[in-house]
Structures are given as structure tokens and as C-alpha cells.
Image (cartoon, rainbow over all chains, first blue to last red; front, top):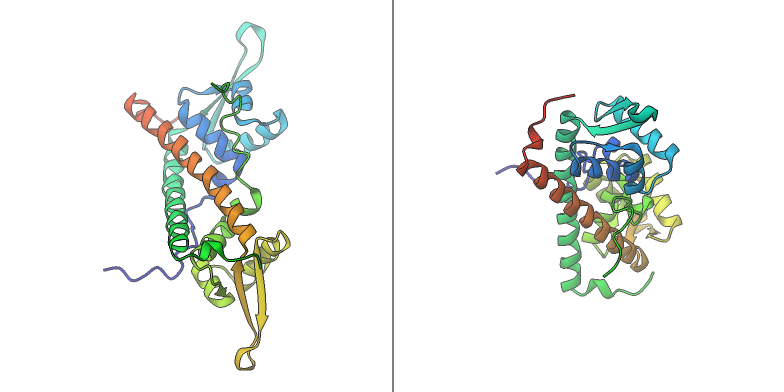
Length: 123
Length: 123
């Protein structure tokens, strides 16, 4: 038997690069589209502005989580955004911790509901 | 039938106040302990320093998500930290979005695994 975790709610595996809200959306889109998405489609799916998406993609590219490929089909600039294999593994590790948070939270909510604490009045 | 969501990965419900890693740990601890936790226990469970915990509690108190009650049992200062009913409702709303992220991510990972994209080589 392993000793009880002294810090069960530390969630150190919640990788800050991936946990940020916009980046979490970007990476979930890219995991769902492993062949990549062009900048404009990714922007729309994530509800981001050009500037915001560019900024977050720069952070992710810097860390090797995404790869950006620029091309000029029909003489128009296009950026294809793709999650790298390394990024995908990092995302999967992060996802395991996120699943644990959701389980812990669900357990906590259920336990307090059944004992009636959910109906405590406002402080 | 509702029209398809134009920004399915925007996750606007990922409340930034609650989503921050340390605060997510703090709130999950407090949801699991609705009668409250003293500062020292909360600090240990979340693996935080005094300074970090104080800073995050201040953000959460400012937003009415937690209530802090100071007392002096046996002439020693003690701070009891508790999630408010409003905070609990906000946490539950947040949790629904987090569950959706985990579902979306799981679906995305499964779909790409079965089509063999998981074995793409590194860029």
C-alpha cells in the first residue's frame, strides 16, 4: 500500500502551458484534427481573434507542442497548424490529470449532496 | 434542431477565476470539506506556500467565492476557509464545462487512435 498523498489537491500535472483556457481549446481542436487546421478555421472553432490565436500559437510552438507550416496556395498566404507527436503525448498526460480533477470534484459534490451540506445558507 | 456551434472549442464557461491551477485545487478541497478547512490544512492539501495560498484566497474572497473567518482559539490566530453557496454554484457550472472538455478530448483522442493518426511521426 502506498502512503496517502500529503497534497491530494496540488494537481501538479496540470501543465500551465496547456491548462490556459484558450490554449486548451486550441489543442483540443488540433487533437481532433490531426492532419492540421488552417489558421482561419482554428480561429473560428476556438472563438479567438487573430491576435490572440497568434500569441497562443507562438507559446505552443516555442514549446514544441504545435508545428506551424506556412505556404502560398494560389498566391495567398496560409498557415497550417498541427499538434506535434510530442505535443499530443503531453496533452494526453495533461488529460489524465484533468480527468482526475473531474472525478475528485464529482466525488466531493456527491458526498456533500447526500449529507445535505449542499443546502447550507449563504455566508 | 439547434444550429451547429460555430465555436465548439471556445469553452467560454471555463471561468478564469476558477480555472487557474492552484485555485482549482483550493476549491476542489473546499467543495470536499463544506464545513471549511483551516488555513494550514488547506495549504498542505494543495501543496501551496503561505504566500501563494493567501494570494489566491484573496482573489476568491474578492469574488465572493470563499469566506474567510478569523478567530483566536487558545489565543492562537486561526483562519477558517469555506466555499460560499454562491461559490459552490459557480464551481458546479464550471465543472460542467470541464466535463465537456474532457469528453471532447476523449472523443478526439479515440477517433484519431482508431484511424491510426496517433502513430504519425514527429514533425
